[in-house]
Image: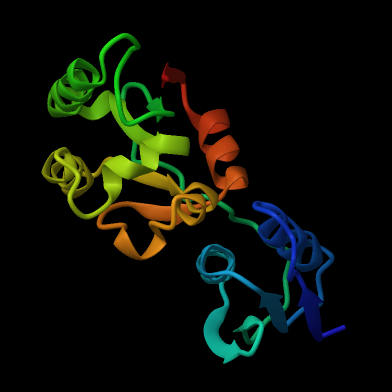
Length: 200
């Protein structure tokens, strides 16, 4: 089996990536076409195939897109998420809201802005920031904390932005920083982290 087609249309995140990985792990696969029906799945599958050593092309279709990966050698998938650079610790911050705390939204917005601008004080320990649910609104055009997040990304902090959440809020095209990602990426990052700090 050197070529295959995988129909992932209608599947919720992170199933398109999971099914793609399962098929690659069976081995003897030089070319794979994955059919998807939304932009987040297209980006997630494309990025995953690239990390697995495939050259990726995308063909728009009437009901989404066909993401095709090709490579010279067939081998099991050995990578899913790039390991972080060596650091004393790997801290992951999970942001599930665009406000910090409950009680007053204006205050919550000020607190989250202050928190993000202060995150750099963690130094090399800060490895990854994950944004999901309303937290994805922090990474889009017009966000008051966008510059702070861009500074973190430029300093080497990995930013993961939930694609399903961006789709839900119709903000996929407005994202300005970070990687559009899926729940499998997020869970894997949490597993690799030495410590997870959760904000809701």
